[in-house]
Length: 278
Ligand SMILES: C[S@@+](CC[C@H](N)C(=O)[O-])C[C@H]1O[C@@H](n2cnc3c(N)ncnc32)[C@H](O)[C@@H]1O
Image (cartoon, rainbow, N blue to C red):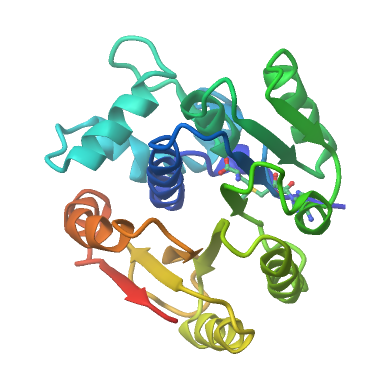
């Protein structure tokens, strides 16, 4: 039984990096007229109120999206991201934070298609309630890793596969590698985003090495840690592995990460990197 609920974490520092990247890639895909497919393997509840007992228990959003709301960011991508999140809110108040499904539904066009997968019964229900009227969206309560095999290649032959597990099940790390290798055999030119937590350097690095050895092509790593890495003290940062990223993404993120780090770092100087792994 899954116990992870993203409502406790929505809008935290990891979500900011994750959704900045997601929005960047969707906007890039929008530049061409041709329709595309978005596969969200671990969709969560879709959209989150920040006024719930869950959000207020951890208050993680205060060290994440709330910090961006307190300032006028300088980098155009940070400004655009703030505008995007504002569009889910009224006036200047931060009451809602969109999950990856709500961001995709907002940015994608009428001719594009979305498939959302979520296993948790309560989050699946919330997801269904939010998006049931949107004809572009198909929502399934099944295993997102299996969906990679089942849904690729998409007839559109363009798209984004967004893989954002909670890693609650420890075998997810292995399952993910197999699923992505399989996905690439079916849909080699798709863009894939894989989220991972920065918990312990040794474990992260060993997993990255295994991913590299799996023969993934054109793999970019972006990481941001607002907290110092102290083993056993939880998540100090988060990272994204991007297969087939838009050509401009690495340079743009190298530019915006210093400002993002200044905004989100917590009591230390923080750290970030953009690295082409393969
Ligand atoms: C980190 S949350 C997703 C957040 C979401 N992608 C976002 O950005 O708003 C991970 C979600 O995956 C769900 N989940 C865990 N294992 C799953 C699986 N094998 N297939 C589909 N969903 C799964 C969890 O219930 C949880 O809601």
